[in-house]
Image (cartoon, helix red, strand yellow):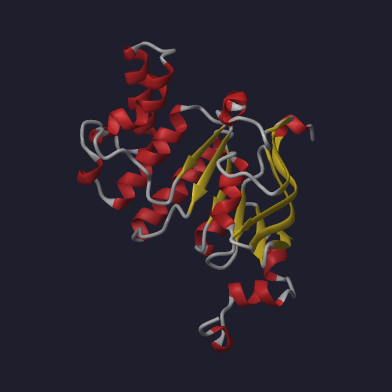
Length: 250
């Protein structure tokens, strides 16, 4: 596979306050392969997303978006590459002072490349895809948690990215909300989008991903399919899949 068809980390090291978050870490997200990163709280899963986007700078190693190394470069020099990626943040990260429609169209309005009419058409199209077109004139405070997540997905889709990152997309949702998010992710994948998710929700992970990366003590200790993961003899992986009394307060 050519470098243009993946996002990757090479020998990445990242620490905060002397604590290693990632140590000599290699990772590759190939186009068309939907992946989930698993690990206990604080393992560094969300940090990986931020490093892949260039929002954090590693102490060592490199991040590539396609063939372009973004490490150590000003954001303005890789803005076109980063447009290939969109992220759905855990809380939705909607602008409270803007309507749903304005949130979804914000990036397009800022770029100024499309007419107002074309932007409105795209906004309604993406809101319809996630099933919340009726909320176009509402404000985030008027939405349920599940609706906020769906609006955040619509906003991500408006940029027509190749890759969509999901940061704990089902946190705080009821079973219906979880079902809706899983269904949306599966529909996106069917349309050719590549998804990368970090989550603790194993049911969602197994429903929406083909491959799994398990992070433990700053390193990848497992990479493979669900079948391979369930069959793994790595103690930390098995404890995560099936906690026991020994897992209490760990």
